[in-house]
Length: 123
Image (tube, rainbow, N blue to C red; front, top):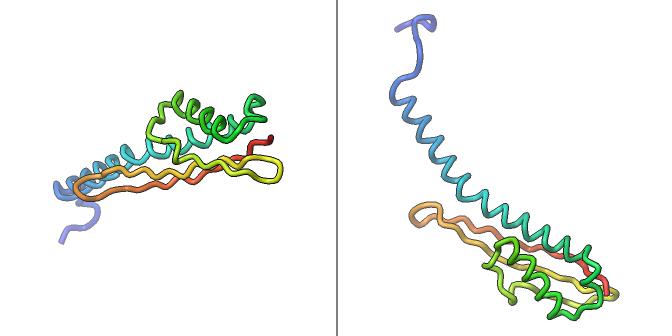
């Protein structure tokens, strides 16, 4: 058996295992990061709708249209009108997006991300 001072470097199998782990991690990151960027775009669209003075006094279908336009500008065309729920509260409208995104990793393995964001738009 060799002592620790005589051993140098990794074996080919060790390098292969490290390379496989790096490729697997990179694949997961490449697939998942755009999904979370979409979540950030949804959150920013809702917060800009909340801060927009033009949104005040609008009816629910008009709020839905405004939000769909903002999402279209951010290139989120997967969200449909039925994914946006507008409910009347005491002194505001609650605008919610209930959206589910499914991305295939490889083979029959999928990642599912559920977005459930909301914002209150005053009358």
